[in-house]
Image (cartoon, rainbow, N blue to C red):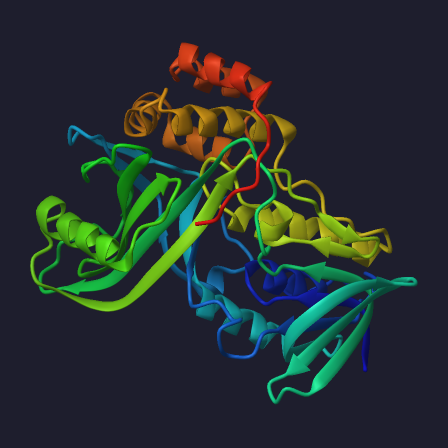
Length: 397
């Protein structure tokens, strides 16, 4: 039996971020005992993945950052490049293994945090807390009792929604024979790839040197593709659009991110809270999650250090969620051409302001100005449709 004030289930971005913040308490802050439960190696542990985000100035995880950029570029479907400086922001990339190593090094100096490898089976509310039943890497039963539990495990199914699209992607970490990449610029959305009949598709390039980059093919649609289809799209993008020439694929990355206007419950029992994507941290219109996770975990840690009830705050404002719901409906209904929509935004709105908008940090007047750059009538029709559209379960990828 393990006992702690806080138990964190899952050691992904949300679980590790919360453990890191609880361990790094300010001088004089109330100390918190923590048990972090990470699934043993195997099917329950997610594969290595890449997280991207933007922030103003240095951040708490810079030691784990793979690369940083100050310029973003978008290519329109017609091939026109739109490039902009995002100062004072920086666009950053972290590999999950590097993030885990950083947090592991930090936690090694804090006796208040214990990191256990265990497959969690149940999380049940109990008197004045919750009980977690799990099995260690040898299959032996293990129990953790905690005052507060923060569960970051993926949901078994998505909540009912009016609109749900999938952002699904496949990427290659490549090394080319000749220097072909601009290490100072991210290819944020490259719409020169063939556009599907429904949804939209784009290329995404994160260069880490003149000869190395993560090159991804991304699509927004209702269903994911086969591995063979992703590989064919990436070959076409790297050869026909980017013209990279001979290259070596050093590693691959695949993912599916729900983009949905579903309502995510942030509490499953009086002392059990959901965090990360399971707690609604994913921005519905973009799929970005990492920055919202930092807001969530910062607020939780501050509450615990102050002795307050640590209920996670909403990851996104009601205004941001309402605007995203309208955009998702407009894209899913086909009223708005996605490639043309995003190209128009980047052509008329500074990239730095767009990124602040995607983080929910723009003022109402800025949102209204940005809205004037969108197809007004299709967006208004989509907004009106949401008033009577029922919420239905998503059948799955």
